[in-house]
Image (cartoon, rainbow, N blue to C red; front, side):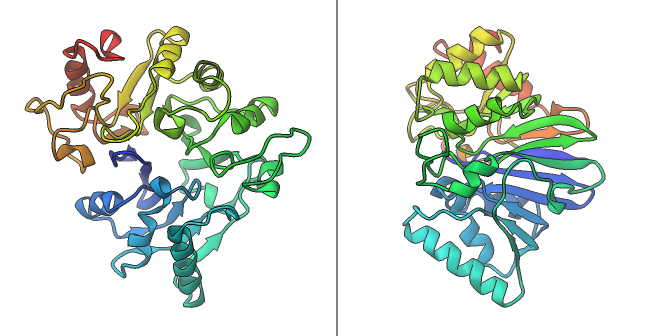
Length: 328
């Protein structure tokens, strides 16, 4: 089976694509969440790791993979970030450099849209499109002013944004923490980003510039998804923002909304989940923090696998203050 799995990692992002024996990881979240998912799935050889940007909740888990000989990573895609001064980013750069010198890892950087890289064709059926950052954004880099725009790019602005296609059908848009600047570049250059599933940027948090409503309206107008997935944590930031949910429902009333973990806005008090337990590793399983939990999509049928979807619909419909339950 060919799958795209959005892992419940709490506040962060990690996705795993699997097709015809090839494995691709997009973002590595924090702590050991990705590692625990890979171990449960018995995945130790990873053909490609793509890091959208250098924030810890997208990058930190890479340390566990690079420093553990159990895992074989063939190729790493990551763009430089000259403004990131964290100890984590320093450690990651050291580990990457060390593995390249020992010929244990292949690295590619300077990634932008308008280019088709060899690694984009994962298998005969699975293809990855880079839709952001634009060449001008990639050449500028985080901390610089975007030419003829005047706005300063952040690490979020230059997130590598990917559209996943399977047998030429757009399955999902993986957005990292793309912001208003990135979205304006995509729309302004008429880049196609339509997809059935949208993994919403920044875990459903505010876009950094402009209003949440206008950002959501413009993003969904370009993607036209049937489902939105928020890779959020219950214990941090209380995402997704209600304004984003409201704008999504106004634009696409039948939109299917899935949060990996239960937002405090939907349910202030923690609930004991005796209705369902995720079959794959989900960070929220401990303490019943999950809502949809880890979401596995069959790329062949474009449907969510197993009974997770129906269990999620049943659960949120029983929450009196659920942001999405009335339409689930």
